Image (cartoon, rainbow, N blue to C red; front, side, top):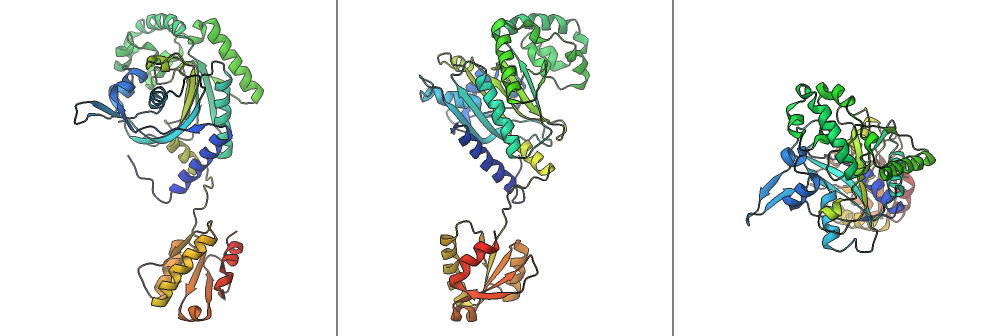
Length: 413
């Protein structure tokens, strides 16, 4: 788990602001759920035979002996909140959320034990139009962030029945190559063989590439859904690649699945992933409701923004108020508050901790401020303030305090 230091927070603030703007444009509503949930929720939704549940969850017992878990992902909690608050009854809500998730993984660049996700979920839409809208939404996000060289990979997992037929053939194929399976894959072979396709083991990639392809076992409805989905992407001019090995890491997905990937982040190349989870609401005790969603790894997006030198909003300090003398300290506080009232966009830092004129001016320069506003006894007596430009070679000048707001508005634009 890592800290986000002030030099990086402008990227986060920029990304978060763009996300809020994007969600408003598509009329998705924000929902917030707890960081801690009952462990059973994730076992039932994610699947007991997954790396997340078996190896990665932060699980503990509270004082009442109840098993609780720090959320490893957001969809399960979102669905639980919908059911508990009757948000799905006769409605087709579209939600988004962002916040920290927790998985006990091997830390590496782009993968942390506390990480942040943007999650988007929509309920009650059976057709592929909602799938296409989510792809459009993510495409627009990359454009708003000026991110390039991202590849969209798509696949269809079909219906439960189609996966069951495929599962039999996959087990036969993998069983015939048992000596090539790693220990995790052998364990999953008769429990959840589709998880083998998600293995990142380099020694198994050739075996996986030659495995039976799920698309050959799809039912008619799933095939039509996928074809219609692809047609919508084509009409939107969105390029994609069909990846037959794309199965997603969570058990509740079916039909459409997708990932946005990049080659700029090494092994952690997936920055966005999602698809349909039509059976999840029923799995948690609700009436059957179609659903689709995706999650974006925010750390990975921030890394891409930094790699591509994307301007993340200046976060720059506009002015630093230097105050020399006791009277200047009192008057300076009042002046600063007045400026903040009149000019909310202004970023103004006042000197704290005393110091002579020279030491305060050094602090002003070190702060990165564009301007030093200088207030001393003479300026107070005349109702004036001195202005020193710290980043450009412009002569220092003195103006009336009553003109300061207009001066700053022109100087920092």
